[in-house]
Image 1 (tube, rainbow, N blue to C red):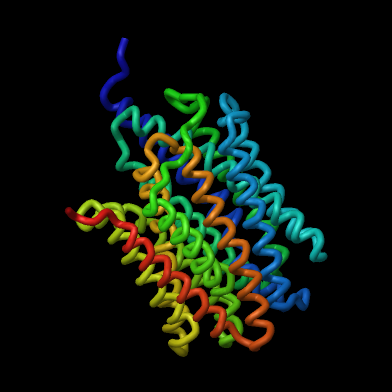
Image 2 (image 1 turned 90 degrees about the horizontal axis):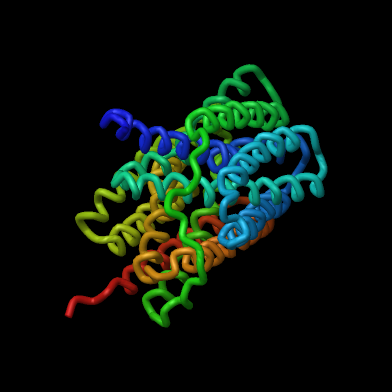
Amino acid sequence: MNASPSLQRLAPLRLALAGMVALAVAQGIGRFVYTPILPGMMEGLHLTPADAGWIASANYLGYLIGAFAAAGDWAHGRERLLMFAGLAATAVLAGLMGLNETMAAFLLIRFFAGLASAFVMVFMASIVFSHLAEAGRGDLQALHFGGVGAGIAVSSALLAILVSEHADWAAGWLWSGALSAVGLVIVMLLAGSATPANGVDGPEPALPKDWSLVKMILAYGLFGFGYVVTATFLVAIVRQGGGGRVFEATVWMVAGLAGFPSTWFWQKLAGRIGLYAAYAATCLIEVVGVTASVAVKGAAGPLIAGVLLGGTFIAITALGIQIGRQLAPRAPRRIFAVMTAAFGLGQIVGPIAAGLLAQASGNYTLASIMAAAALLASGVIAWSAAPKSP
């Protein structure tokens, strides 16, 4: 007996919501709650900008290794279990950050948190996207990706409440762990026993020898380098500029709220102007945001940066992977791994370079200019990779 039409409509929506909550936990909180908590850690523990950069890069190294590991065949049939394990680890590791005060502990914990977030990202996507494709509901992918922005916004609201109660940085991590545990329960209720639909195993062919593909891999790496500087240090920039702690949380919340609908918006625009043009346009808009974070004085600069960073970086991630899959349609897993590697290397180098520059110069201006230049180069290279009309 076939399910009723209303139930058939509900199933993909329910899975997309599960994906949204999973990304809210693993990415919005697991990876990016570090940004609003960082200024308090730097102040309370006397961490330098270089220290902060190394801690961020440890997380991104974990993400890179996790993405590579998740792309392997060993995980086939275990996707659901590994995704839930990643969410549970995210909650535990966030709590552990609030119970430690040494650089060694921070580096280790953030490395494993990056590993966990990559597992959730890859395995939840394999579950959700396969079912959405089977149901012909690709439009719901935007809801799934919106989880990153939702997680940023919710965790920022949490931190604003903690600030009003005069809580310290450790409380931010402990409550983020508790919030992540709640998210895990919600995902378990929504996703149930779902596993990837129509999984296909087998060796993929080598990537095509295509100059456009090389350009896009390079562009994606430069994007990883460029976006992560502001994504890591935006709230620290606000703190250095004398913004209050509630304003710090507000700036990061604005970034999350802008990120929630961004993938849907840019996908719609890409349908009109093309993937390459949309990718280039998002990079250029992000250049404006990154530059505004240090060039526009007062409250306006960080707020502009929050809106423009949040409104682009999640969408660029999705657009870049889409272009890669278009250029290498017979090797989706391989191109995901290679592009994630390029992106990951950029993410790892970015915070270290920016932290060292900020420490040497006493502010984040040079680091932000460097990030803006990388984003500009990413957009130009992606634009040049677009297929030319005959």
